Length: 370
Image (cartoon, rainbow, N blue to C red):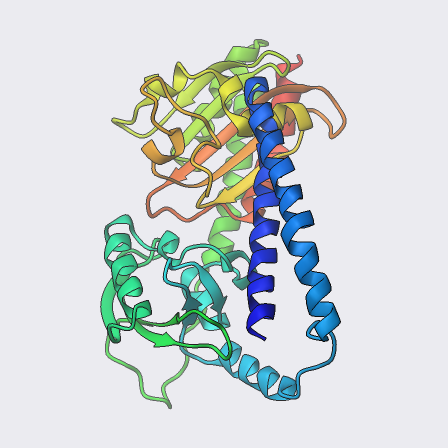
């Protein structure tokens, strides 16, 4: 069983590296050779390591047959998922292996999206180093720990994180079980007290999207018949009320940075001077005509680097982004690329907001073609 666990981890790591190779297809031409070398190396790893291991385990019968403890495992899995307390199972690097439904509700992310991502990515920057150090100490067997952290989704609410070591089944490595308990900031209600009335957050966000669509329509209808003017009008509508950063690039085959709006004191000039061809996300949207929604972007090079050599996403402290092509129809020519950033504790872009921006991008493309 130990060999089976190692084989599963090796196979999972291989799948992640293949996904990284796929995302690297938009690198500049002079870097494709290194990407090809990495792909060949991964194929050699499959032929020389993964496949012989698979054949050996198949011959030993470890890949077939059901475990006699399957029913108990299902029960434990159901208990973990339905536990009312937010719970997550992480490794010593804080990567999430499991998160229950209460944990997903507290952090504001789906359990499938959270798997494999570091739990520190959901914390405020000031708490990440301390949490990472405490998790590593617990995994080394130095005893249970507890500390107060703050989630990006609700930075004003302190959360008590309790960490304890756990050795799941036959796995060779020690995991860390994390229990998150939000601090109570008001008098606790008795069990018989009436449940609070649901807030109108969803209705408010929907109304905000309608207001945004109305403002965008007015700006596009009154804009001069000039591509640059259309992009400037649209960017001014989106900036502040919808996104902290608005970056607009005109063209498709030959992109040129046209508009950059950012927060006060932000390095707007450095981003404006950046070559859009050095931004993989922008190039991919211009070539493929497909948009991208990312929450807590993992690749710091996704939007390239500025003139100082710093990663734009890191320097701007981007927590979520939207990058969409400006095209009048799905199979039509691309008129440009629109990129939106949200930073700090601001709520990440939702799927509904991404859909609204997709509609607005088509209206922008129509206005640019006048």
